[in-house]
Image (cartoon, rainbow, N blue to C red; front, top):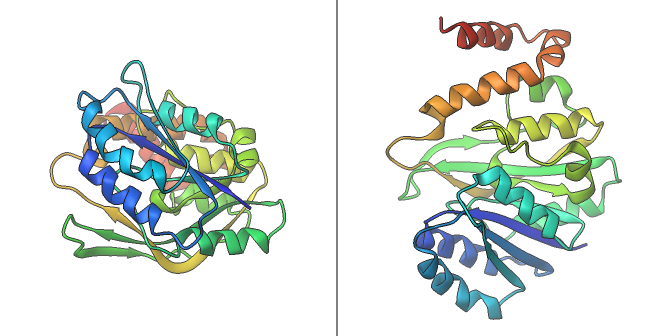
Length: 251
């Protein structure tokens, strides 16, 4: 099996370099890397950071012709992907050396119903002090569980290209919650998820404003609740339905 690694990137050349080094250190080597830059002003710096890695593995760097957002960049990378498996990661995250191998081993033992494999993740500050450990155990066709919360850590996802294309890729109209929406649609297509029960990714929490506390976060939740309203109702997700009402009415 082989993997296309898709990285949306924006104006973080130093962090992108750290991620690329962690990709270079992977024990599994049959992959390509596709970086989609979202019209960074410092694109020349990003090119300098990327250049040394071109001799280490197949690498494609393209730039959007205007600021378009991470979902557009991810979709562009997925469409360009040559391989049957897609690993998604942001430019400010990092992988442990065995990350790809663990997921490939699980995919090779699974049938086509397995559409996505995630891993355990450490949420850390910029100095790698552990803030929280994400040790998910959820597997199978997890319809109720994905409606309860987005239990799949974003730096850890490996997905079948067929499955994510069938689900409709990322919804480019979402200002946030794009990953939750995408995994919900993939799971409701009948695909199963599995987990590598090892810490294999870092998710960095940076200082300053974050999407989780921004007005865009609220807009994203409202769009998710509206889009999946009947699923939430069918599976009795009262907490989310109440939150949808409060966000929609400003209460």
